Amino acid sequence: MAHLCVYCGSRANSDEHVVPQWLTAEMPPWYDLNDSQRTILASGKMRWISHPFGTTTVRVCARCNSGWMSDLEGQVKDFLLPMLFGMKESLTRTEQQILATWVWKTLMMFEQATHPAQPVIPAHHYTYLYQHRRPSLRRTMMRLVRVAPPQKERREVSLAFRTTPIATEGAEPAGYIAHLRLFHLGFQIVSLDLPDGHTLAPPDDDESGLVALWPPRDTLTWPPKQAFPTNVWESLYTATGPFEISSGPIDSDELGQNVP
Ligand SMILES: [Zn+2]
Image (cartoon, protein in one colour):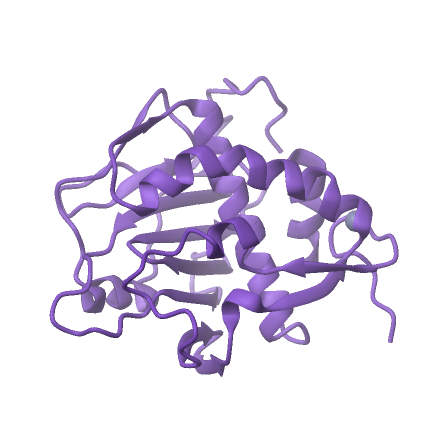
């Protein structure tokens, strides 16, 4: 069955690598890329796929794939690679936006590759990403974690993702919480279906080692002093709200864009 591009709605005719090839080529030597056992966590259950580094999905069109998606890979590479290896980096607002957008896009491609029939990330978020080339400043927040390097165990989970729906509970709005692990870098995204005029409070850096990524601020400094052991990072998978929500107009539009 022919699919439509999840971003622009044209005919999907392009093979997109879920994990970009430039990243696969730079994998640290202590990860065996030929190992067929890689953990992929999808929507509440474990999934095993043989070679996630080679996984592709035909859910985008050639124009998106070789256009803005390819540009995004080119833009993120210069600072994402050193971050993956734990090197000191400081990211500008623009770089934070590029990284947050890349993480969101990569999570979407994982969903399309593993459980396209029941995606947790709603279709209109793909359209939003395509139109705005960034996550919402009002409804979405992201945090970064440095996951501790492997200790004794030789086999470390190198790549994992999970998207979990957040159900409406009392006054709590619905949405989803998503996690992406790439080697020593862990990302957490929270996106809530907030009515107009309501804003999800921006995250703060905290002493445990959580680093706020989105909405962007003047400078983001990496890496944090504290690293999360793998099990502590994985415990974040089930952590949800309550989330702090404020009402009233969002005060900054420093990216010079509209704030839907
Ligand atoms: Zn497209």
